[in-house]
Amino acid sequence: MASPAQDLGPVLDKDGVRLTVDDAIATVTLAAPEKRNAQSPAMWRALTETGRLLPGSVRVVVLRGEGRSFSAGLDRQMFTPEGIEGEPTFIDLARSSDGDLDAAIAAFQEAFTWWRRSDLVSIAAVQGHAIGAGFQLALACDLRVVTDDVQFAMRETSLGLVPDLTGTHPLVGLVGYARALEICATGRYVGAEEAVTTGLANLAVPAAQLDATVQDLATALLSAPRDALIETKALLQGAAERGYDEQRAAERAAQARRLRDLAGLGD
Image 1 (cartoon, one colour):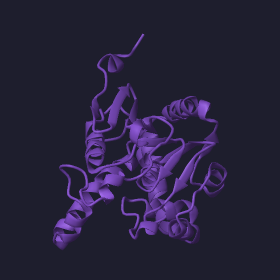
Image 2: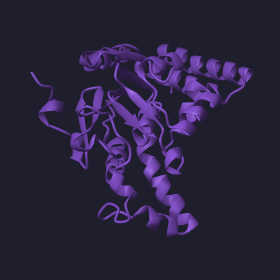
Image 3: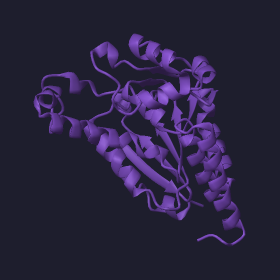
């Protein structure tokens, strides 16, 4: 029998993005396979809206792409003089004021920021190509499960641009500065074996096993009490910015909150 959330159908379904919710697990699907899930400002606005629409019951978010590719990157129409109808072209953006240009890019980035919220764990299920903006969207998630045929690439530098959709921070954190620079500067492809070896991906599986593997991982994540997972995620997220003694203090404070909560003495 379908759950009530499934009976209601998608919570959101527009501009190549579909959100469905099944109790504690939400699934965000890039649903433009005819374009290999190429991304546009409209898709980014829909992804931003998706984060705002998540019910409070959701603890795990799965991000996936329909078709053979997770996401082939930016919609190539954005590189043409005509651009995408109803959207500013790259030339329009370049001619805008410093403040307007900064605000436009910041708005684009909003689609990539909410995946690391402390109350959620996000999993990117990545198959085929994850190029440029597609690579950065996968990097926006906490965890990545990939297929054996995955091809990551950061092509922005090759196009005279930079990766500006929040991908540089997690990339350096995962693989280190030198490898991140080499990946971005050359624009080369990173396959499944290297992705797992370097920490870009948690697991690599045959394509036929991707959905089941992600479902098993989501179920395992739900086995831990929610508040304990939230505290643990926050500790790990802040570890790189804290010194050793600061991290020890953060651990003590987090554990004190958990002990008091388990003893019924929390706020």
